[in-house]
Length: 244
Image (cartoon, rainbow, N blue to C red; front, side):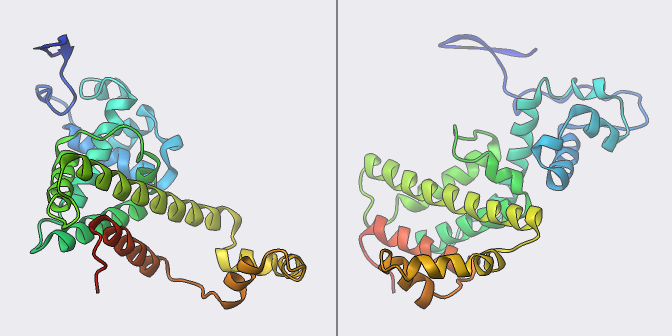
């Protein structure tokens, strides 16, 4: 194990800072990038519950023990997978203004979460600190620090918290609905239609007038458009200046 001396004592180097193992004279060359890519393919197909060292090794055509030269545990494997997805998000890059940059990064994050649904399960806990995750965090924080309503570090912290809370909640809801539709064979519109008679009876009692308005007058909103409009509302609230 590689170690580094810090003010907190001697600590093991995180997986991103450890050098790759020396190549072996083996039929199948390995790297952390190849292991992460194989793990992502499996997680995309079967979710995180279907992920194991044995399955990844089989996918790569190697023995399971070879993988432990590159990652010491499941946590490190997830770190590599998550940072590989952040590499996709980082491709959003910088744009001409702070709002355009944030819109690009957040929409790119949504695209990544819909392509890799397991990614949404790993959002919202402690921050991800891989190099690509840090790059996305820097782009996001730097753009938000330029918003008109963000002047101090405390305001930047609160603004980032509000943006992240929206993002995690929105992505988890959308991913959960997609999973539910697949597992039940019924999309949201069909589910609502199946409960139509019951809901009609409940609304006719007059006890839920606002819910009745939403059901009767509300439209079936497009998921992508709704995400964009809600994101715009969040940014308007952060800046204090509604965007037209």
